[in-house]
Image 1 (cartoon, one colour):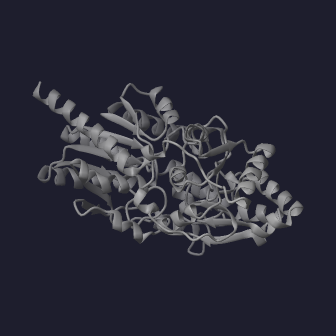
Image 2: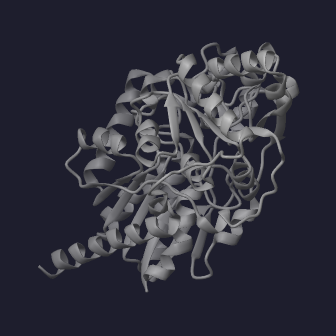
Image 3: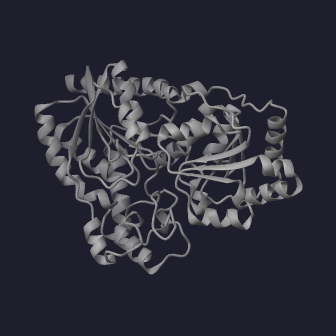
Length: 451
């Protein structure tokens, strides 16, 4: 069996979206003749824990773990033990930061503590606070690979520090290396909001260019991301999207009898669908039956700004706050939805990004209401599959019309989603494509070696 070394920061028991892609690839790779050798941190600071995901680690996988030094102790000394601002303000835009904010990087008004933490995050730890893991990992894996050879190296970011590990190992060993980008690097929508000094910005861009130039192949998750990277490098780029695991959807969900508008995962205030809440408020005021039936089910970490908007729209009585849920329970919520809502971040640079959960929304076979760029990656996907619509944040009429359509079908018991082509996004089928790509890389590598 061929071996692939997968270098990732996120691995079970980590919860959240970052762990899903390569956990599921690793789950199905052995059936395509590839044994995953996974390298992950021994003592990471994960934002959420989901031990149920450990069941997806295949018995064939070799899991290596090595200590990581993250700057949390330094941060806490700087901020004080009683600081309510989470260290995640220093490390991630997707974490639950203190003072009610999921996304402190993109937040317009920041507290003094947040401004200090973001300045440290941007300029003292380049490209990200996991940069302290690079050289210890290179030394550890260099020794391991000398005794336990593999056929190809894969790194998956963010955090993009992992790509620096893969780049160095590839140069040392001569092995082919795939750099997988789940999100953009310097074109990430929040990058422009980092308080970067000129030298730090230049260093990030040099690092990005070196990774794109030296990788054997670049892998990414949307066609629009591929277009952005293609303008920066001649390295071959392939798109393998995120997806859904059909085994997760083998659940029986009882009908609650309510008109459930469901959102799963992180819900940040910079994606607050204010017009949606306005539409729902109006319908509740005009239609007592709608108000009685409506349930807004939130399964995940929700920003304080979202709660304030719901209060202003007088929708508190209709909200079911489920808090953070394990992945399998989040899938159950998706299956039980009448309408799945997916507001995107209100930022023009979010256009090429495709949230991973949209594929699970597709698999749930429930109508999807996306709110964001009507010419963005998600709009293209929903139009292609016929699974729903994407309305601009201010397109009140389109949002209202789609909810009316779903509500009328719900009352007549004809609410369904006639999506097409969803099966190609199953994790099993996507892994077949990945294995084929890895096989091709090995063939090319062996040909060059023979020459």
